[in-house]
Length: 159
Image 1 (cartoon, rainbow, N blue to C red):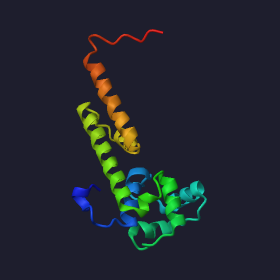
Image 2 (cartoon, rainbow, N blue to C red; image 1 turned 60 degrees about the horizontal axis):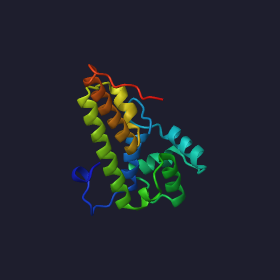
Image 3 (cartoon, one colour; image 1 turned 135 degrees about the horizontal axis):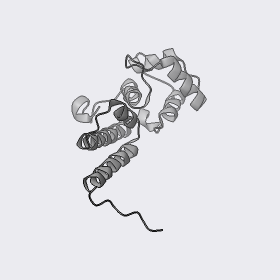
Image 4 (tube, rainbow, N blue to C red; image 1 turned 180 degrees about the vertical axis):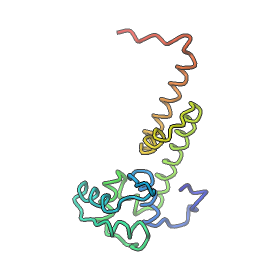
């Protein structure tokens, strides 16, 4: 959800949009591409200690509930490992979404350059944080450089 495609800097991001972004990035989705709201709500409740129902989570995601309590926003933030301000401050959300998008594109580019096309690997790496994606991209580039220079392998470090 980068600014150029979906939202101008002045447009308000809804809780549903912010939650959708997190679900796509960090939640395990079923074969139909949707989360199990019941399972996810139980995981959120277990991690945060806040009561959460699958129906309520579904309503938040669909935009049918638009005014969640701060306790629920904090529980979501805890589960998804984002600051609570992700849900309360559009500028924070936009920065995080843009950072995630840049890191994903960098990782995709390095994987494509390395000829990595395995969908399962791409899926596993997409769950990484932006810093993790950048580290993975750097590692892939370093591996490519090592492979290209395989005629003269690097010497192991001396102890």
